[in-house]
Length: 115
Length: 207
Image (cartoon, rainbow over all chains, first blue to last red):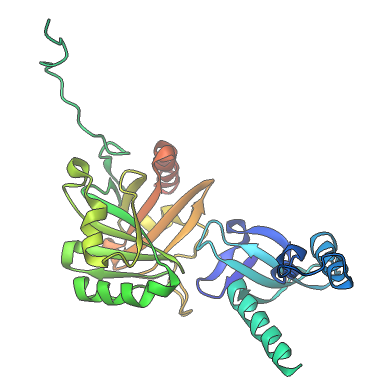
């Protein structure tokens, strides 16, 4: 399988390490990050705990298009988000995980600003 | 009573990782790269522009893109763009095995805009050249070394980490002009003999 690295061009998948679902980029705020003096037993805390539980334990197991994290260990040590078909192994898109994370952060900030 | 070791007639000399290996094959020359220093230069995001300016002022060259290297006539220096946050700096320095001054040499130029560590003693460095060099390399290297029209193809001024057989290797292409077809390979010193064996076996298979 060839992964078309955004900076280095086509590289053999043997240079990469597979981590898993790219949803790991979107780490929810941990309950311990609450501000001092806040009640830690309220509904907001319960929701944060549930979100963190889902983040750690729940994964989609798509038969088809799937976004995954790959690490270019024998290369430029970058993290990539690879959009791949898990049935055919066809790769649709490859992005730097750093760019995806920054785009997500900007999108969240924009959404927050609209509220 | 005098110390019997104080007047020893023995002197210690540093050995290079490949003991100065140098051999010619049919259309391929292989030799250990000697008299060079290698310094890792980690680049903090907020100091990258300052570092680029300092490098430009001292060496009259730019920081490279990832996958490329830039050159300077000063110290015959090359900056290897291995990843977004890190470069290696390769330069001629005969004094490296005597004084271990590789970091201070670069630090004067970068002016604390990067984190530096001396890697000179940690890598086996091999130069492989000749018209058949590419034939030997393409049996063990997963990078496409053949020229293509793709702008990301591996060509002169290209450098990258990769794996050859089971060994981590940095490969850089110095020139691709017929008989001068020339590459530098770097692999960790701890497996230097395996690295050389891998290259020589590949050469045997194409000779």
